[in-house]
Image (cartoon, rainbow, N blue to C red):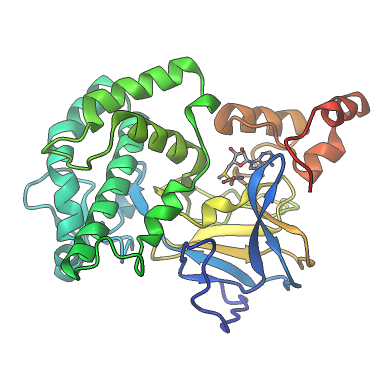
Length: 346
Ligand SMILES: C[S@@+](CC[C@H](N)C(=O)[O-])C[C@H]1O[C@@H](n2cnc3c(N)ncnc32)[C@H](O)[C@@H]1O
């Protein structure tokens, strides 16, 4: 991180009302007819420049590495050492810890929302479904818990419905792409069962949303959540010998970072910092008008066109249209793609 170039002239710029911790003045949002929302740059970006620092709206530890459990306070998120961990007094879940009394007190309202749900359902979901399903549902509960805590704060200062202070962060979650049309019927049916069993609005989870909205939230979360790893993702060309990104230690949803599309020839490297904030750094010089892309997967793992596209199709449900994939397509496939009707034009 030592060679990052921070340009600090516009510290409070927003992307369509969403306010990340920091965004480079040249990073803008636009729309691509095939890929949807995207990041572009309006001016030159030197290699090493920091483009974005985005706070997670919700983050959960992933159980692989019990040495690396992150503080539950969303304003902190730092990995806490064993000796400094404070557990929930109601013992809702061993993965819920805070790194100090201050963080625990600051997180009371948000955690209060998830605590009963975790105590009641974490065990049964892990036993009857899977660790993956539990993680996915817990991210949803944390999204709802954060929204609840923000609404609570706004109601304390008396401007809950004020148009001057809308809940910018939740707008970012609301605008994430993803819908039930993207996923298979079986998948959507299984998520619908999970929502009805475990995520309906109740005294244990008073979010006030209908089943369809929560199901839609799952579809959005599944299309937009990030895995957090100890090392950077997106170095290209892959260094020799290759350095992978390590074991995942958390999963998170970032309202602004989620706008970044994937490329197998990315110009951005991404990695979460010590507070769980997603940091985008230019991996080469980027020219005005260029799209800014991250890599959604570890480029050391999938190398040729078919393995990259298969992986993206299976895990992210889209056919990669990045410049590298399109240029590597056999000529007959290229003409098939160009023959497909586009939804619009640039
Ligand atoms: C995390 S979102 C990225 C932002 C998204 N474009 C939007 O409109 O919000 C991931 C989705 O973007 C689209 N996408 C991202 N990278 C792509 C690529 N290389 N080729 C085609 N579609 C892509 C896919 O629809 C994918 O499900």
